[in-house]
Length: 243
Image 1 (cartoon, rainbow, N blue to C red):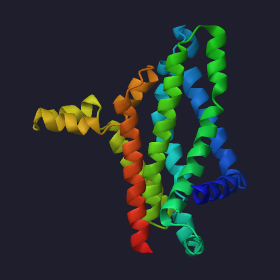
Image 2 (image 1 turned 180 degrees about the vertical axis):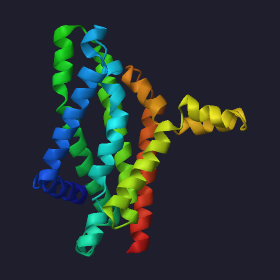
Image 3 (image 1 turned 45 degrees about the horizontal axis):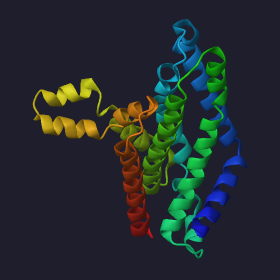
């Protein structure tokens, strides 16, 4: 883990050495604030419930911003030719993947932590459920990590960042909408019930909805950890093959 942490520190430092990180943070905070206070009728509802006005938007905001943040992870390394330098260092491929993933995830967690004024405003105006807020932030952090693992996989497949962004967005959108009634109804018309349930089980939303209500279920945690592990394993196979 020492090598992975060293790579993570280097990667995290490189994020804040460019204006892209600050633009991402500003766009993320402005977008979540606008959706929370204006689109969701935050004040008109008169309920101290962040699950309906704040956390509900995170899957859709991440859908656009996380692929944009992850598209450079390996595509830029391959385009600039620095991936050869990285692989000649005394680190394994797995350590490099884990280090890059941790750096990008910490960056996303920093962006998520900066939304604390929303919680402070809600606590000042009412008495929100602390358990639901903690569960919502936990679910949002795991969701961001899952989106990020998909983006890392697509970034490893190509040196073009735009292609990586589009592929990541499409895969995340499919996983996001897999459990929605319009999608399951399409399968229900011709597929058996077990197949419909199987398709719905791949969706991000049921697990995220459970966490943002404050329900801590090990099955939800296992789902996110499994998806991240699978995507990172796929990234490892792709990079090893290309090496």
